[in-house]
Image (cartoon, rainbow, N blue to C red; front, top):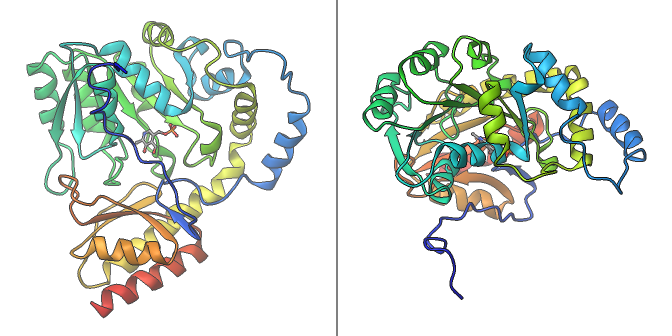
Length: 351
Ligand SMILES: Cc1ncc(COP(=O)(O)O)c(C=O)c1O
């Protein structure tokens, strides 16, 4: 068989799962939908016209999102997860001999989307403490005539948010579109969406997979200028989001107040766990504004194996550059957190 050049060398994003008792490896919500939301969703299911193609253009969901951000529906593009949005942004602005700037370490898919779109990735290293120097991003973008800059805030996997002043500084000083990946913003509370009007090069990518617990449905969206939205939508397949998902996401969005208590719970639990972890000798805890915590520990590989054997799944970064001996732990429910913490503490204290 003769496949496309480079396909075989493309790194794969590992999505294989084990039979976890406590799953803390993908930054999902560990709670399923709130009962009221689930009830409404199940009631609506019987009214779906399964025989018809989805109405992706005149959908309620776009209208609801537009209303919330006080933008027009022409500024909203829905995606099959924010993954689709990101992949299409790399496709729309990238291509052969076109440079795309993003920080590392950050969301590992950026590198893959750069490859798939045949763009040239220009990675910019975060500082030693994983903070982002906006000047370095601006310089990399301008020196390489970048066609797109992507910054994730709060950042996966490091957890820390980029100050809005830095986001604004980048938007103001680069000459290309600037995608801000806000997959975890609900756990932080400060969005760059308010900068959209002032900086037409800003693109906000959001997801329902994290705070809104809808990872199974695959839905995300982007907010951008009318021109960018129109151009990026050209790269999407017709009917790229199914009717069940559109219906579920519209209900979740209408009922998003139902999610506030659990978002508060995750934030409180993140603080509690970060403080508890910091008290264990030998563990470095990085500041987090998300629903996960990144830690460094000399025997991270052994700890990961130990947790795996007890059916507790966390994300290990092995020897990934700048993430050696790091584990990323999604914050679960209070009970789950008490369980994994006890196991982890016992392992570290036994040395
Ligand atoms: C930073 C970041 N962006 C985007 C995504 C993609 O999320 P989804 O495609 O589920 O919306 C993820 C998922 O883990 C992520 O961590």
